[in-house]
Length: 315
Image (tube, rainbow, N blue to C red; front, side):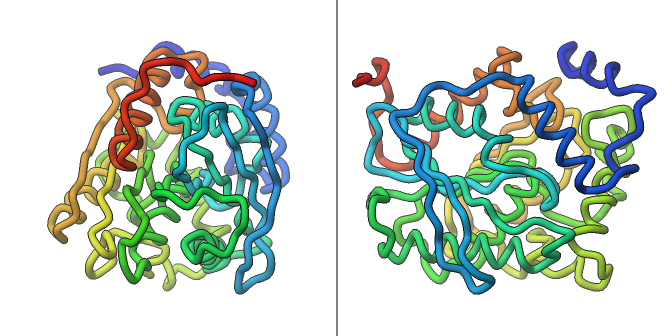
């Protein structure tokens, strides 16, 4: 299937402009912020609350998105951006939509970014944030089932976190959207979609150069979860969603296969015609909105919550 016309138009708009990978992290962060602002605001929340989590590298900022009619469960969300980009403001629309669609509070983990903080800073913060949540020592957080979720580099961190869990415990499911699971740029999807797309092969090399500047470390399972000797940790069930027209498609599929081989229950869904970061465009692309609704239903089922049949009550 061809790239969806909405994303094809976005690609056309960027032609002739310097690629993200040609600039500095500061320039890329400014471009990302401007692009996210054009997506519009997310749905209104009952509350947004900033808090900090303990971490071995210092306090980890986080933001809790509480939807109207919130259930007793928690989504711990790790954002994308190649471990270099991404803020709570950049993800406000997507995370708010996720919270509303699931009616589950979402904890956005604002982990340290590269190149100021290269590997393993992001992985350390991701693991430490999850440990803090599961310890039960954070007042004001739901005490029910925990969903671990992330997109792109955040999907990578989701895998890293689940691989490090000593036991499944309260974790109901891991949800990985178009995740980075390897450091191999030779896969077929890189050849097919590595140029003239929203995420290029050059972009991925740029991200890796900033996050893991030492090539010898790129085979570390905390960088490339596909290389973990037993991926999936204590067999945490997984939902992996890939985009058809994305350089990361094949490694997402490969990770699903590796999890299955390790005895982990897996649902793999490839969304036709979609580009990388399509979920961020849920308000503009009906197919992305439909996929969000499908994922929300699967998250609620994994958490033992009943299907939603009515809009939440608003105070």
